[in-house]
Length: 265
Image 1 (cartoon, rainbow, N blue to C red):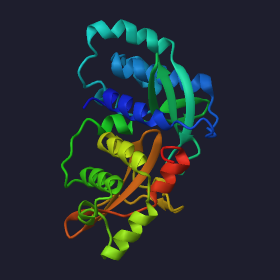
Image 2 (cartoon, helix red, strand yellow):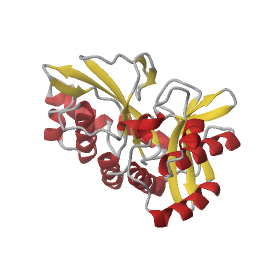
Image 3 (cartoon, one colour):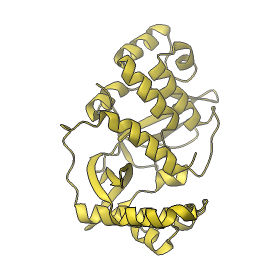
Image 4 (cartoon, rainbow, N blue to C red):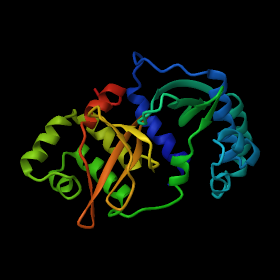
């Protein structure tokens, strides 16, 4: 599924629960809006100069231009929407970097989001989700296992979870489900989001904030990997470990993070 369709649907589903009381992080509106406009123009209208302005130095710009063109009948209206972009709230990053945030905005009435990082006085778009979306994965790959874990968690499917979570006993599995208890309506909505959630690898050496409060420096090798994923506007980290050739998710109290972000009640 195209990245723009995924981002549209996860935001549309997420905005059902958009919490007006949630305190947003402050961002420099003009610079953040400029970065969003440049990225949308560069990525979707294939303007290389705009995309270079939007991205951190050294980002793989050419790779982000390798996708089907926006239909000709949509391009003119889309360009107008980009110029009239309306910045929304910003939300915390799962990385322990105070300069990084999830920035929301609207094109017309359509909600969007982009991860951004502050560099000097400007905001730059973190392209990791867009780059990761270029490659597929199987159910046995780390990203496939994370998606299966999220689907099983929100479905409360013990059999599905048992094959992908790093727990030893059924008692531990029951305790994890109790810790991640959510209401039926929330679980149904989050299951849809889990089917669509963009995922991207972290970089070795990055510090990640996990839902249990642990700050952990990323180790990405043959034994374990850490990914970021977006469920609505809530960015969550997922750590997977290789156990006898099979990837297993290290469980976390994800329900608490989703509730704190306003994605569940």
